[in-house]
Length: 326
Ligand SMILES: Cc1c2[nH]c(c1CCC(=O)O)Cc1[nH]c(c(CCC(=O)O)c1C)Cc1[nH]c(c(CCC(=O)O)c1C)Cc1[nH]c(c(C)c1CCC(=O)O)C2
Image (tube, rainbow, N blue to C red; front, side, top):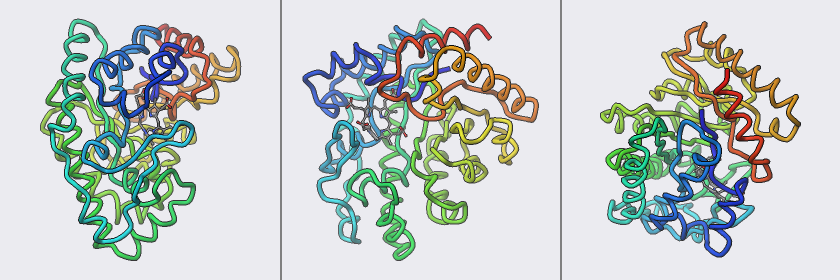
């Protein structure tokens, strides 16, 4: 078990490190990456560390002008909207993520004599494209969907370039020693199954195919993707992340390949007091047992999306203890 966004603002020790330093600055500093990755492991005794980074880090490393604005998210200096903008998108040079490679090497060494796994990650092409095209977070993805439908050739060119960046970023992490990788297609749930299959699935499937040779488990996750679970499993991962909207036993009935499931406690449950927390954790575990009986390969306990910044870290530690006792 581990928590998406287990490192971050829910932890006072994270806020202390970030007090006078920008998010991206921290993401390119080896010592800081190592420290922030290990903080939640020390505090909560989760079974996996997730590399402290962000989905926009490889874009920044490739030279895209962007910032991560607190309370907002990634903001792109010059949004990518035309064929020429797409042609200008640079490739990722390994040397530009040397600080991250060094951090993974150090983390893999520090965790080697423990049972704690190290998980690497990257943003999926669609979610990265949505930030580049919209220029920042969006509720509607209107420009992204317009480009996708109106000019599939420019869209596929952009998605192909983002796929290359994502593959290279994952390979750097896998070469340096991560045990598993997660592909975050956080906002793919904005698409219908048909459009996901036409415009997104081939690219995400290529990401999975191009890192398959490492033999490391590959996790595929998105939010609000209940209707896309069949297609997201078809992309080829060993593990499918499920948000809280779909029970795990229902999720397994939607996939046509053998996959393990990850999830899916609603992150807002952690605000409801111990009786509710205990009941809901037990419900997820029971549901996971039912999913395994119905063919799921296994279950990784997690939230259905990231830890919310106001979460009481004591409640997170309690959930870890509870899951480990069950
Ligand atoms: C969509 C997305 C992003 N980044 C990420 C995703 C996919 C996961 C998801 O769906 O939540 C992935 C991510 N971002 C971060 C991690 C670190 C590891 C971990 O999970 O603990 C991971 C896995 C650190 C971070 N990434 C960010 C923070 C907060 C930075 C701060 O302290 O201000 C952290 C710890 C910033 C960020 N970066 C992004 C957002 C939406 C935000 C939050 C903006 C805000 O609410 O302030 C883009």
